[in-house]
Amino acid sequence: MNGPELATWVQAFTTVVLAGITGYYAWQTRRQVNSSVEAVREMQLTREEQSRAYVTVELRPDGQAGWDSLSLAIRNYGAGAARDISVVFNPDVPQPQMPGRTLNELPLFRDLPFLAPRGEVRWHLGLLRNVRKVTNGGSAASVWQGKVTFTDTKKREQAFRLNIEGLEALRSFEPQGRALPVTKWQ
Image (cartoon, rainbow, N blue to C red; front, side, top):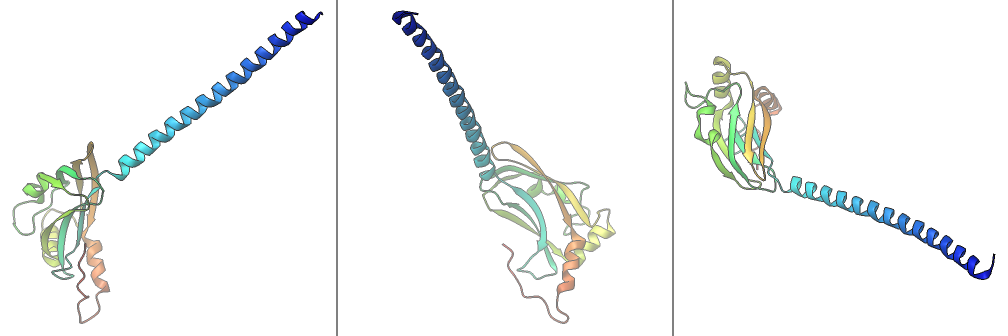
């Protein structure tokens, strides 16, 4: 092989090697771009989950009225506002303060237009013993179940379960002869 022919072979070999290295870098760059796109997708989902509304229905002692008094609260634990909130008890629960009516009939539970982040709407049910009379004397069980539907960035549905017997069991922690200190539940 003479000099110009050898130079041509060396140039062809280095071109092939350079093309291989460039292909490898292109493949690595594509992997990094795909990883970045996936990371951005995950960050968007995380941000959406952190900024959404989380609406619950809770049954709890009403700290202002005493340990024997119950409140039903619709609460938004999330960082986003909830709109068009609807609560449905299944099976329906008798309304303790209006005999013959049910909780599903209350406009508050059918159409609550807005609940701010970390906001709540409380409804005083009455004394635990009266709630027990209505629920046990009627058709309702001591465990109330249902679902709450609401809209934040999209339509959502959350199931809930409220156990009256569980609250009654907490009363057993009350010291004999004196009431527990009144605590404001926030």
